[in-house]
Image 1 (cartoon, rainbow, N blue to C red):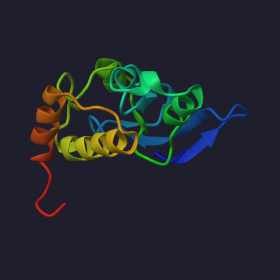
Image 2 (cartoon, rainbow, N blue to C red):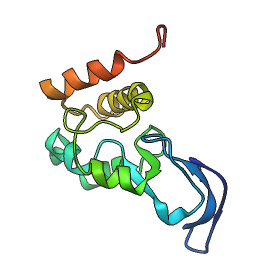
Image 3 (cartoon, one colour):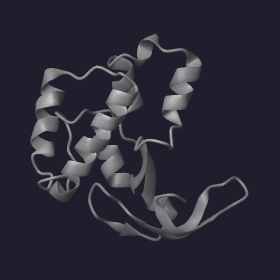
Image 4 (cartoon, one colour):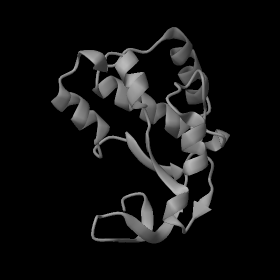
Length: 135
C-alpha cells in the first residue's frame, strides 16, 4: 500500500487493485500480479555480507523492514532479473533510478552493518555519481 495509489487489499492483506510505478524501470501497473516486493538488499546477499551471524529475530526484522528502503514494490520482471545480485552485478534498467538505488542500498547496508565488497563499492560510487549536485 505504501508504494502504490488507491490500493485495495483482500482479507489476507494481498493487493487486489491499485496503481504502482516501478522505481527500477519506470513501468506503470494497475495489475497487482505484475508487481513483486523486492528486498533491495537481497536476503542471500545479506547472508554473504554478515547476516549469517544474526539471530533468527534479527533476520526476521531485516526481511520485513518497512522503516528503511529495504522493501519496494517493483515490476516482477525487474525483481526477477535482479535476483540476489549486488550493484556490481545488477543495476536498475532505468539509469534515472541509479542515484536513489545506490543511496537506498547504502542506507540499508549501513544501518544493518553489512559488509560491502570492493566491486560493490565501486559500482555504488558510479551510481552515486549520477545524483544531482547537492543531494
